[in-house]
Length: 359
Ligand code: IPM
Ligand code: MN
Image (spheres, rainbow, N blue to C red):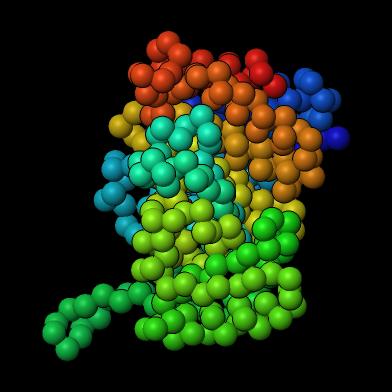
């Protein structure tokens, strides 16, 4: 078996963490005989610096030709003065759109060995949680009409949230299918007390729910969901929500696991080809120092094996190695606690070495 993976290392810590994931995949390859071919492409700030464009044509083509894409992170203050159409973030949105990746799966769970790092009250942390946020990724306010105009009070700006029935239906189906493989419980998050798109969202989710009589579905307003995430995160199993709400709530969910450096994500469309990336950003402040936590990217590679390449055993192998490494008390600095951890915090490379040792 052989797979081609397009690599977009990106900016900041992106190259370091992608290199870690590639080393892990190479080690999996050695042990299992599954072959991975890597091809690197530019996007984001590094692409702006090299060729003036945030998302070069060649990158889109390479992503569409590959079996999947592994991305580090894009962005940084350095490119803040780029015009909106050429900002690093625009590359990410462009790839999602061009590849038709309307589903974003963001699992957030607390690792037992890291429950000390959870910022929530001890009783809450000890109850634990294990949820997956199913975020709609190619619609809503991220892609609606926007602009500047003359308004009643002078110059104004506007962004538009729009959702079609089709877009809601297909993400709702993903949520219910995901729930069928888990605890058969979906919480749909919206703002139906104010927004018309949310009312359509709610209506549509309930219509799709009829096809999944075994799944319990609950509606939750987004402000309440933000509160419940820190009050009783164990309530959530599958959460389905819009692009914007999912962006915000997944950062919140990641932080209550103890570190945003731990959480992977998968972006999927109608085919098995997906894009996999850590949910954290490019962290330019710590770039090039060998201190970034590579785990989110390594776990993203595991998700790629599971969801795009149908290699569940190999994915388990990586996830178990990560778990064993954490259980051994080994930590990067973001999850290091001097009272409970073994020795000094490890660097990006050394943490990767330890994970590979345990594969
Ligand atoms: C994310 C990021 C992106 C998003 C940005 C960089 C465009 O925050 O993947 O969550 O908002 O989707
Ligand atoms: Mn985000």
